View 1 (cartoon, protein in one colour):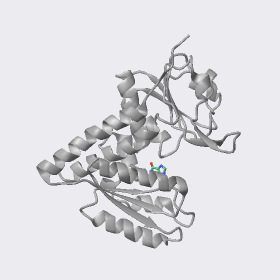
View 2 (spheres, helix red, strand yellow):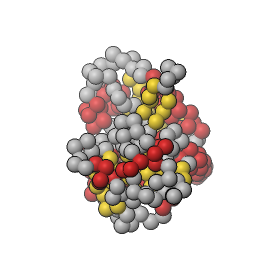
View 3 (cartoon, helix red, strand yellow):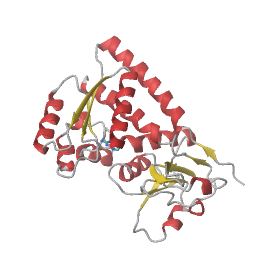
Length: 289
Ligand code: GUN
């Protein structure tokens, strides 16, 4: 029987944020530059409000400047694009994040394309996606960046390992696959149309689940000893009428099979904001030569 160890993303993220704060203090002291992150929230989606509050608090804790722009749900697309243009031109703003999802009447693709790629700390702009794909310096989406940091920390060299990424979103699945390829993994991107999805997953030394379906990846999909990275954050109802968070992996079933696994919550989740701060620091450095 394998002893399955949880990966403590919360502790890793706290440590990363502390290291970032030291580097920010250094940048302020030696260059007189304070990294600034602007976050734009359109509408009142409760989950987004929580994210944005946490982002602002952790930005300030790291010693960075935080600029919050909260716009009503009926904001015209043209007004949002005008705000993005102002932030692009503002030298105090080194990073811009437009919280997704945007209300239905706004074309997200158009808004993301309007962000200056050098300030695109989400890494969602096609220029950054393209730069990542061809191996140039890019701003990389925060969640996959966090996943690969955890993997490198726990496994060391990933070269030659077989990685299966379940999910093909532009935000997680595709960039995660690119980053693992960069680490010399042999990468498969699997998805809802994959033939024999359990069989594909069972080949994986590294299994990344990013599908957004509660507990879809079952225990017998996991190769004994594999490292499982669960990106899912799904709210499911409990019998008492409240809700609980579960990942995309059946965590209980993975016990005794996986070697290492990220829990939900406390695994990948806390890494996302820490990586956003990392990207803001990286963007600030690049903008200041
Ligand atoms: N909504 C949920 N997660 C994210 C994220 O990482 N970035 C943005 N912009 N919106 C999100």
